[in-house]
Image (tube, rainbow, N blue to C red; front, side, top):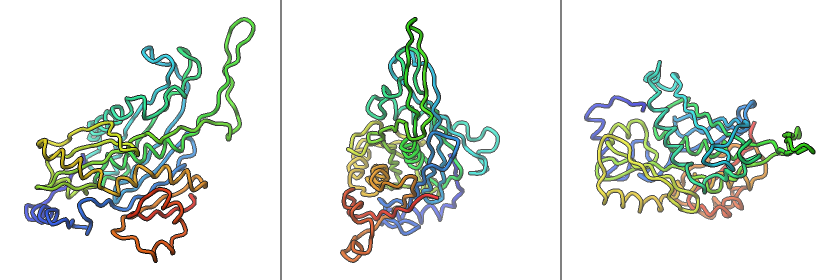
Length: 323
């Protein structure tokens, strides 16, 4: 994990500010930084997305290739994750410095998607026990500005939403041999449903309180964090503790209680719904947390109908066509 050196005075300043619900950049403990999501950014992939969360920059590409189903799941396709920590993100990743972090992130993604509800893997099966689609999800860390897991989970979900898989027909002749025919029509494809794909919310324990979307400086003041993957319906699929410190049960219960009250986390879970409703893919999605949404703001926003349909009272969504 990328780190930053802080003096004791700087750490005390950050910790005392968190206790007063006032962080260094002016946010509250439950506020996210501005998020920028851009889909269809890599031309030679089946789907791609780029997410910028503050100074954290993540690029994800999805490549669909034919493979053989696993023996234990003969009628399902599967996903493979690979995480590359670019040396340009931080000098600590030079050489093999980012291998451990990449493996940790990949293992976390495997745990999140290791269930039947996240992705309909049966829809990736072409012919049971013979052919299936394998989705290779490549994650590239371009810049590390804190809160990597949250940004990566949003980028993976956006890339899967953008993925287009060619439609396949299995033809069988009189002798029983099978031939696979791929459609060459770019619009004749299968789109994955990402409604139940979870996003990660990292709750970082600092002093006696916790914060979401921690910066590198705030992560340096924390000894333990709680990773919670949760769907848009509020179903928790995975909980994991990271860091050298420990968390007592009371702190964990308090974190989970405040998680359902964090309006910004709900925004992350419903970004894909916003893209589906705006009917102009690819697109760029920006959102910023607002503490109050007055009638004047509602009238001035041209996407008020999208905003109201997503039921996000304290979040403003701005949608622009992609380049």
